[in-house]
Image 1 (tube, rainbow, N blue to C red):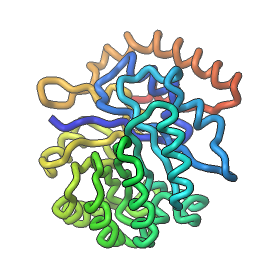
Image 2: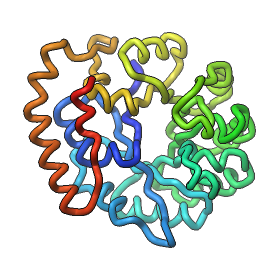
Image 3: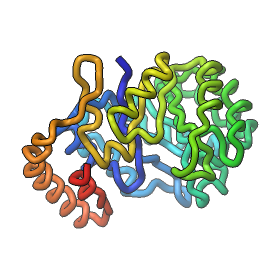
Image 4: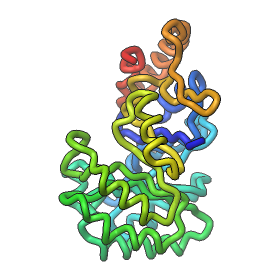
Length: 277
């Protein structure tokens, strides 16, 4: 059975959402945090709050970092180790121009020499396991072909691939031919991410790519938090009547979390989408 991972989405899947989803729905093998970054040489307070152990009740949480230089990576990994984490994810998939123009997220993919320098730093942290979440490229769908050999050369727990390019953001076609080639050449466990909105979507990916290690669900899990429920080896949504049983406690807890976040200046505002699935 493939593993199920919850995708990190900035502003949406922070600790309140993760805790509520884990308590009321579960079924996720690991939740990934939205990326932590260095801004003007410092960490953002909201990022630190989001990864604090006491703010997270999920069984398995993997913090994600975004960096373009060894100095940034060193600072971020140091933070994770200090907070007690022994696994981290490196973001090479973020499509937002303000970051990609600085060679972060998918913006680093056209520069394999920079990717190599960053990956070389991982050897300095034998106590930390790493994964990479990435796209096929930033501007061209074949940029991954120079990057994947570099990824294959370092120990990774998994690669999570969204088979679009950064310039597409979250729209347009998925490059299935490139996905298949990537899967054939990848020497690490591979997780699929992108356009998984229904149980049938998950089943289709599982049938088309049976060697996948798992799938990562983002927007689909926000719209339908029961999408990840698994039964007897197949994916099954809640029956039509059950969401109404869950709405009342879910609403109460979401409201309390929202009030708490409002008091601390954070902005977690996607909970209403729980009721659109």
